[in-house]
Image (tube, rainbow, N blue to C red):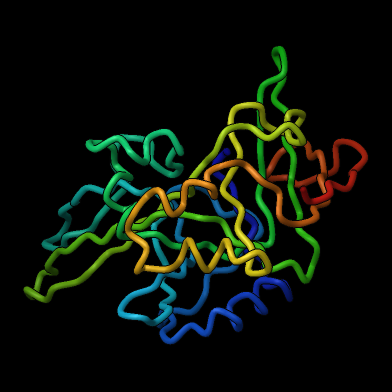
Length: 238
């Protein structure tokens, strides 16, 4: 999966957040944007002490401290980590090993974008879920603790999207991987979000690529311009 999410204020995103019964929201509110790039902030939902919490997190799992004008910030590390591959989740020294067991999250979205190189040409597609689809990406998160110039402790949150093997229906869109797509209807989202689940074997079946929603697939010229570059078509769920 390439680094592009669609988090528009759609009925499906609203309904999903309502049904998750989120107890706490970020002070600055939920992040909405048609074009969220890796390293930007995106709203995630996680479970702590039996409550659902929404946070705005940096979409890059590995961060590193940066000191400027006496204030410490966290910035994306030089190691690419906006996605976490499924085959790294059980590798003990990998970035997502502990998060897979203890810090899973979901990212409510209205769709996502993919790109791939065909010959010498880059192709771009937008995957747009039905307006009332309650779509979420399965992800991981981490917490980074620091102190500001006044000695006050603060917590920065980072996240990644879990990517799975390629799906046969998406070979024209992206041949290397498929994002983990979750749904309330088949209980996959609830299972992924359940903080009491710490054994990887309990989630192994979710790491098989599956399309759980109907999408409109729209070829576009460039993500920044967002102009159609061909006829759209419907992609049915599995």
